[in-house]
Length: 294
Image (cartoon, rainbow, N blue to C red; front, side, top):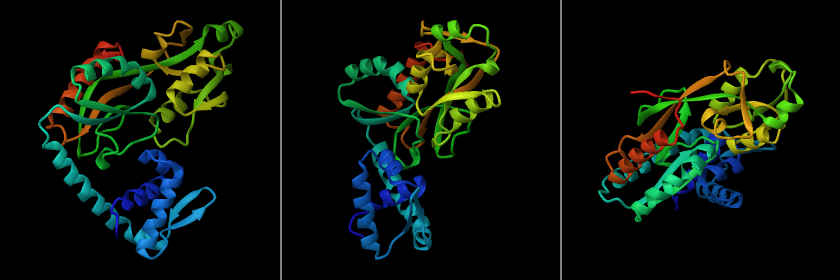
């Protein structure tokens, strides 16, 4: 194999099932993924995927090399992590994965941090798609979750974030006499790879409710509610700071942990540890948490 990086593209497609999903995961364009996959298959001497109208699935040959490819990539990632972890200076790049709403909320503080540490640069991945810290798709993740962290990750629980039902003032004026089950709702796209939010929102929306719009990002959810398209669940740290919104049915609230996650072998690196401490302080100072836990 002439280029070991082709493995990343093979594995991204294998795990995601689509070229567009792999491109989004790796931060490249669609044609780059196709080109690298073709290169991989030419080098191997056989095709590794079945092409379908809905995506890609491993064929028998692809399945036979999947475990070996993952082992090889894990070795490269481990080597890179050890090399990165030996850096004792506050300089270099830090990739932070979070949600779009958390990213926009914390961006002013991120700017202040970068002014104090001009040799550090941030790459902020602020979307609703899952990233794999084990494969260094990000260095640090800010996650609102109910899942225990994987064994290789260090998890720092910062506190609890709550969500409630919100509606715009204009919407409530038009529907002042309706009960929750009769409202028009904003839903969450169930096709996302990051499904915690979808599962929670789906559990709380009344059965057979009218869902007029489904979204795949917090920013779209916020704008849909503000626009009066319907009501929906929104994080309280966003909802209570939006004057055009009102919280309705406060008894129908849910709560999840907010955690900072990082590979254990990166935490000893000064720049990553400094970033973790900074993010924890910023989250607490911005009023994101509904309660602080020890």
